[in-house]
Amino acid sequence: MNMFKKIKQYLDEKTSLQEREINYIVEFFSLKNAKRNEILINQSEVCNNFYFINKGILRIFTLNSEGLEASRFFAFEGMFCTALPSFIDQKPAGEYLQSLEKSELLVCKRNDFYKLIKQFPEMDRIYREILELGFITSQKRIYGFQGFNALEKVKWTIENQPQILLRVSNKMAASYLGISPSTLSRAKARL
Image 1 (cartoon, rainbow, N blue to C red):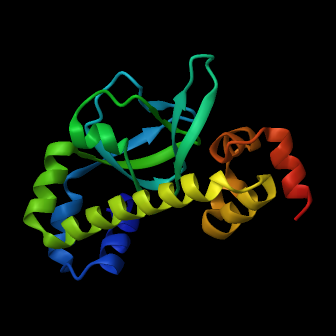
Image 2: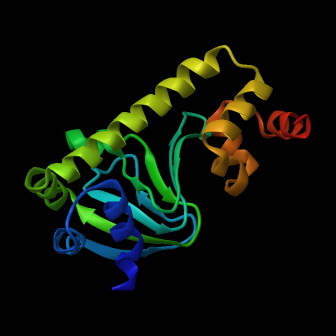
């Protein structure tokens, strides 16, 4: 089926799985069409879904006590995304998972996902890569940003995650960078 084209391509490029194995794996994914700004997981829910993005953008964010949003992660087409801590430990997410655009998502239930990573070492490797990439990106962002001024943060984002500045609102990108939207605009103007 056409809805599986991107995930099949992803698995074909990232693994040495045979076509029949890839076809078997994708049968565990179902289609979800998410509306613009739809909350897929709220902070009090336990996350039981692993998403592959066919089309759209997903964002993970938190709200502070004053109701201000802090974006933590953005995922784009051809990427997997979930509220990982909750998905792993089965405790309330403490964060929100939201589709920023009208999105076409492939959803795999947690039990099925863990079954697949047990059954296919290649899926386990992909999962480990997702975990490692998420860890490395967050560490670089956290520790790198500590000593960066606004311009350096914007330059780092352009080099490492350019889609954020191209496809996400200034307000959300600024919350990800830990600066105000007006500071982000000024920094972008200086480039």
